[in-house]
Image (cartoon, rainbow, N blue to C red; front, side, top):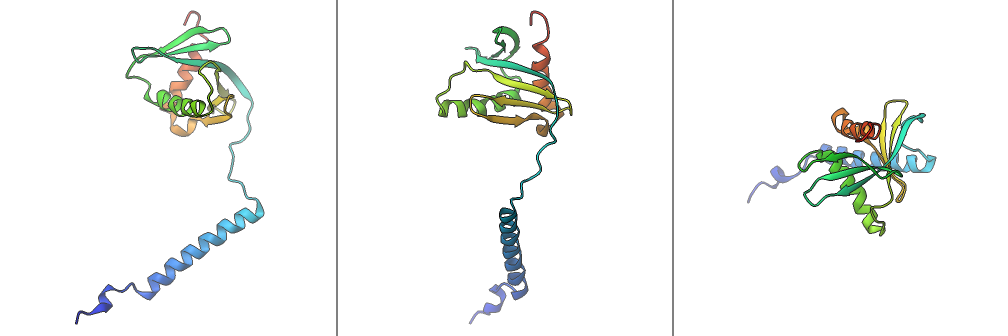
Length: 152
């Protein structure tokens, strides 16, 4: 007969796992009962906010227009700006689900505390861009700065 004691989990490990599970459930329950909300970023004044609209071009480029002037301010060439494209893909997916077209602009905001955010007023979605790192949020900062350049 094989020795079945080698296949058993030690009682101390089972007790430890049970303590972790019960402890986690107690902490979550306490948080819900007390109305705990995770930390939100500090409120800050708006330094600059621009409404921008994005349009796909047949060759894979993304055209960036300032709104409401509908002036072309930037062109994201095919194969570039993967982060910008990824963020937009997620926001556009939600717009499609809500049957909202591409006409309503997005709001790109630079805050006094250095944060940068992209909002979709049509769906209420908000993306804090700085959490993705300086390089990624910098791609949106470039778009924000492009809206200020004359003729482009």
